[in-house]
Amino acid sequence: MQKPKSINELFSAGGQRLRTLKARAAARTRVLEHVRQALPQPLAETVVSAGFEQGRLTIGVAGAAWASRLRYAADMLRLRVGASMGIEISTVKISVVP
Image (cartoon, rainbow, N blue to C red):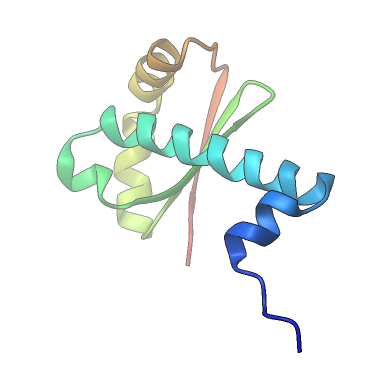
């Protein structure tokens, strides 16, 4: 009987699709960190996901009230996150993540 492989072994030996998935997950984690750093602590804790694609910063928050508060800070986020990541963000989309 063959010993089962660990998740790390599967990711490192996986095909192109797994490598692409891993790279996308790492990129989203970096964006999430930049978004959280740009926000005050109570608001930063409610951000559960973030990503950047084709000029759009997409942010997922843990509740409708927090999403409303974050929408007021969208322009500030666009500028701060764009500057810290060295990219140009044209739009910010904020949504509630269940």
